[in-house]
Amino acid sequence: MKRCASVVLTLLILMSLQGYCAAQEKEKAVPRVASFWQKLKDNVVHCELCPRSCVIKPGQRGFCTARINKDGILYTLGYANPIAVNIDPIEKKPFFHVLPGTNAFSIAVAGCNMRCLFCQNWQISQAKPDEAASYDLPPQAAVDQAAKNNCPFIVYTYTEPTIFYEYMLDISKLARAKGLRNGMHTCGYVNQEPLKELLKYMDAVNVDLKGFNPGFYKKMGSMAEITPVLETIKTIKKVGVWLELTNLIIPGQNDDPKEIRRMCEWIKENIGDEVPLHFSRFMPSFQLQNLPPTPVEKLEEAYRIAKDVGLKYVYIGNVPGHPQENTYCPNCKKIVVGRIGYEILENNIKDGKCKFCGKKIAGIWK
Image 1 (cartoon, rainbow, N blue to C red):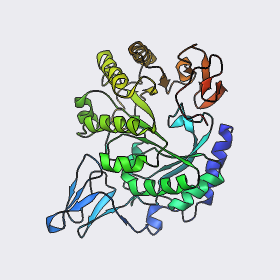
Image 2: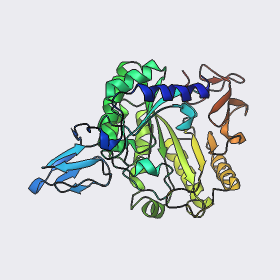
Image 3: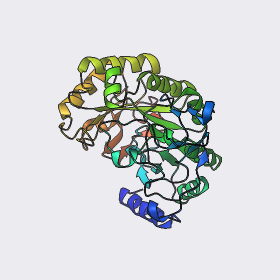
């Protein structure tokens, strides 16, 4: 499908959504009781969804701002009220080894359980879901819209899907029953029990591996820890859900070649050499507007390191037209998927294999 057509479809979807209006003008959806929490003394609750492990007093919210304690019961404020609903190319997520050239019905709810200083979507990720302008989109309506608009994938993206866990899970179950697939782009900051439950209904996950230095995570992600993210990555791979990784390279922050090499070696040792790795170009944003864009040479250096370590599928993102947007057969080295930006120029994969030499190419191709 042409990308200009996908823009038109997005506009038609937004026009067809019922009940859209500014937050202050519409009645907010009734909060749903959250999953994964325990009640403590004096109506205090302990949220067990993510490693933040928030202990929340009555009337207060968790770190993500999307979960609130009301009279000793933890509620999610991010149910059926997405801040963004779009049809995107699947390549935008980015998924480069998943149904090239198809469209993804993309959903986001305001909020995040990190506060990265470099966030590209900070206007919505740092908003509160019950106070932001949003759409009224129950799970069944989301699935119906995806099917109506011929989107084989529903992808939970833009913000952090973990914070609207219950909404995402309910949509995913309905989508799976209807024959649609589910994917998400996540920071990976989620506890193992809710992650494993969610992965039963996920087909593809892209995890932001923001760096490979605990100090970087603490500095850039409001005292986040890297270990739970690495555990998330290993679990996704272990259960057999398709996995891709994105590493945003920020000048002077996480671009040390030695650190990049350690990250690539960890990837190869723990999840294998066929997991695609996207090195993405940083553009000044949010609280790091004083930094320059990532030099293309730095991205190319990271690419060479990853290939030298032995990773088979490595990409350079946010540099439209760069030759490392293409997928190359690891055997014959020919282009099996040619791209410019989000546009597919050629697809030389047949029955999951390189049509030139017959080498199996890891991914979801049909």
